[in-house]
Image 1: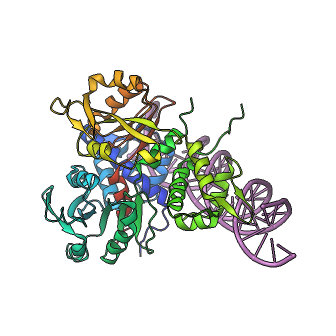
Image 2 (image 1 turned 180 degrees about the horizontal axis):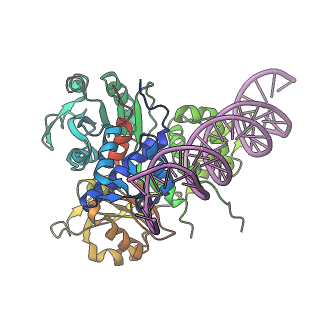
Image 3 (image 1 turned 120 degrees about the vertical axis):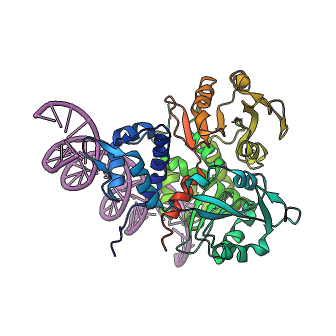
Length: 208
Length: 208
DNA sequence: TAGATTGTTAATCGATTAACAATC
DNA sequence: TAGATTGTTAATCGATTAACAATC
């Protein structure tokens, strides 16, 4: 009913980039922008930006361009980040700690709500104002807090098991920092962050 | 001369994923694999894997598939990660520290070689066996160590300046953790890691 | 009004997939 | 040999770009 159908995933993936650029423009006090200007900043063609946005509605005015604040709000709604998503962090090593302390989540729609680890030495420790809980408590706690989004920061060998447990507890979006491809049921979304993969991608081009 | 021409960047981007899967297979003691099996694991079609590899040569045998160790070595060479790249980390906050301590670089062709921060309170501190150096020392040190690869873990407001300095010092590949698009000269490669962008991409699909 | 910029259409470009002969 | 799987070609599919009428 009134559903916006069939928008390519690659388009969805660019919306957060547009959002980021718009928020910088807001900081700069810029009131209007154009597809040309945004494209310039982001290294994307203006036609692509207009096409992408046109999937969701008409946000601009001919001759004037886009109202920065308005477009920002619209994209926030489209991505559903005009709300605050509580997140679980699993694995409280160096990376998990960095995620727990990261200041950049809150302004962009997320909030670390609970931390889990299987190391007894860590359980109960206070990290960024949260008590580290055991993996055994994870299912209950994730359900209790209605957590739908989680970040996995455990070794590759444990990542699939953790993912299974998270899914069972109701998590539907996983950001996986472990360098391994996860198998999840349909309807559960996974994104990967593997810095080494990015680095290796670039070294290909570093010939002489 | 004998150059392999015009390989799509998107293909290069998948090679690290193949490499990762192959290294898991090596750990498992698997000797042979097939495009079908790899595709299964990675959620990629077998045709795509064969097509991707065919850009670089013929690595398989009909009827048998691919020798895991051999294909692994070949892709390592293609990506130039059969060597150890020294890396600079700029910004020694929580994230920079996590990167400095990360154990996963060395086995995959990288090594954190130097750390920089502009906070006087941090300079001289020992982090993961390295002394934090000042940004003023960066250009000299990067040149001295012939560092070509760097990771930026400073606030967005400082990232462009840092990038400029790194490029001036000879860095040609930058992994940028700051949530901002960088402008760099041709021939310098940038990849981005913005966890929030990935999260926002997924929340789009978390409708009801 | 004149100039600028949108939203959209059609054309182009590129990537993925299906199919299969070759062959281990 | 029979079965399996490659590397490659051609067909399909999808994404990007160019162009422009509409209009602010």
